[in-house]
Every structure is written in structure tokens, then in C-alpha cells.
Image (spheres, rainbow, N blue to C red):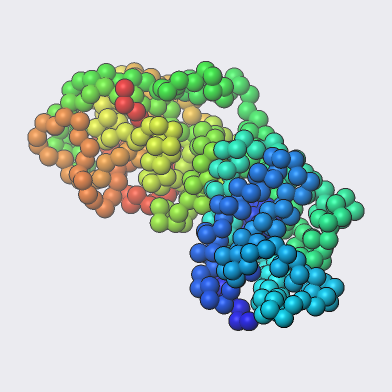
Length: 470
């Protein structure tokens, strides 16, 4: 039987995933010659396989994975080879394992079956194949676990499997036989499976990782974000900006800041602080779409969350620093996922100005800038924990410096007309950033200062904060 050739350009050293998905999708290597797309097969059976596995686990089955593989194997062969009885696959297994002959009318089926089993055995040792499978299936797997509230049950299963992989004598009899058939207890393969299981548990219980061991008093900062969901409201950690009219822009800055023009805005909410790594982490734990390994490449430049060592492992001791290395698309997705949005450029400047017409939002000018923001002269060449400086009169922290902030608008030159609730042009090439960063000179922290970048760009100086309707 002709084998389906599949090539993935992946780096085995960056392998991530879980043995659940590996073993469940082992059956997807049982492909037919006429099957033209391996990925299509994965997508076709992924949902039912994951649902079956979690269902068997919740029922307390001793070997939920083996039950799932049995069901999935029958489903694949039923649809692809037209069999109607599970006994037909059992007959092939007996022929393969014990040399028991099968009826003549089943020989062709069993020949195909044997070829597919051999393909699976060859593929199981090629761990680089599994990264692509896992990256595509992880969001569905974690979503289903959360949907069925199966985290604790899956954890029990993970611990049992880790015991088995680390010590074959702690495996159940049937389970041990299955692992021996698939891996022959090759230590390199087993080590990969162990890593995958440990990563899965970490992603299911991010709050237990070292980075989440932050004292409550540290979370209850002036930013107003809390661990306790019962104490959170739709606008926790936000400031309400009243409706009004202000003069936007500056005649003393760059050409892109001119001309000064009048803008009228309805009231809106805006975050007191730039979104931190910890807040971003909590959302990634619930929404795998945004994770470093799964966020679509078309939405970033390849350096998304570059300073994170893994999907749920931000840089050490950076939990309460602004999240950076996020593209405009990532910032927008984050805000949308928590029921908020990015502020418009006009909203950002109105909130930052706090009624001031001066270069900065506070009294005293540049001489007092170090009391309100982190910039080149006082940052020590690094980003800092949020809300360590004074807030502007609207109660917003780090609105000057620490990290540039993505806003919603496409970049364009200002017009002369007075406008109400502007959202920027409908189309463009670059998105706007505001506020300046820890690496910039004081001049870049002015409230009227504008910069632009491709929405896919990521920088270690750029983060964001969210806004919301009243």
C-alpha cells in the first residue's frame, strides 16, 4: 500500500504538546492511499476524539486513552474502509499478533490495515511530526477540558501516565503493552512524552506555577486588578473619562502632530495601568489562540512574546511589568477577549492630557517628568513594574513612558476640521503608538507625541492598555 508522505518544517528542540494528543492522533497515521491531506484527516476527527477522551476520563475509565483510540480507530476505518463491525479490526489484530488467519474476504482489508499500522509505528518515533499536530489541536483540547470542567480529572490521568512513563512497572498491564508496542520504552521518546505531559499540566493549572505566586497585596495595586473574580466588575482597574472637547495635537512638535484641532468625545473607560504580563498570562490560560506557540504568524513579525520562554512562562520577575513584544493585532485581540477594546488615538490623548494644554499632563513640566514616568534618563535601561510612579491627574499610571501603547487608529496626518469621536482613517499601512517608553528621551513622552508601526510589529518597548464603552 502506498504511504502518504508528510513533511513538516519543525524544530524538534522546540517540541511542545501532550501525550494525550499524540496518542489520540496516532490513529490519524492510519491513512489511506487516496487521502491527500494529513491535516484534513486531523481536522476531520479531532473534535470527536478529544470529546471521547474527556468523556471517558470523567466516567472514571481506567484506560480512557485506550478506549478513545479504539473508538477512533473504528470511526476512521468505518468511514474510510466501509467496515461495520469492530470485530473486523480485531480479526486483523489477531492475525498480526498471533498469526490467526482471517476469512478471504477480509484479507485485502487486513493487508491495508497492516500497512497503516506499520506507518504508525514508524511515525511514533518521529517526534517532530507531533508539534504540528499539537499546535493545531491544543486550543480545541483545552477548550473542551474547560467546557466539561475536567481539569481535575485530566490531572489525575496525567499523574498516572507520568508514573507509567517514568517506571514501566507502575503501568497497568494493557497500558504497558500499548506503550511497549508504540515506543518499545525507548527513553528518548519517553522523555518527550514526559515533557509533553508536564507542559499540559502547566497550561491547565497556570495559577500554580512559580510566576503566579504573587502576594495578594501586590496584585491589589493602584491598578485595581485582583485575583478574586468575585471582587471584579466590568470596569475594575479602569477610570471613567467624562465627555468633553479638547485641543488635540501640538504646533511645537513633529509635523505629524500638526495642526492643533478640536475634538469632541463621548465618555469612555480606560485602564489605569498598562496591561501587565500577569494579566496577559491569565487571559492566555483561558484562550490558547493568543499563546506564543499558537498565535497565527500572519498577526506578528515572528518575535511575538520573544521574552517569554514558553506559552505560559513570562520572563522571570516580570509579572507586574507591562507586557511587551505584542503586535497591534495581539493587543486588539486581548482587549476584545475580555470585553474591552483599544482606545482611539483621540481618547488616549484626551485621557493623557487631563485638561492640560502643556507638553505633559502634570504641573511643572519636564523638570518633574522623572516623578511621573520611566524614560532614558532614569530607567536604567529597562522596563519597570507598573504604577511605581505618580499618576497623571486622571489617575492613569505610566501614561508617560515605561512602554509605548498601541491605539486603534491607522496613522495619517491630521486635518483642520473639528471632529467628534474620530476613529482615524478606514484604511492604512501603519497603526499609531502613544506615550513613549523606558528607552526614549524625555521629548518622546509628550502627550502629543505620535509614532507609527506596522500592526504586525513587536518591540520590547511597546505594550498597550484597554478602553471600554460606558
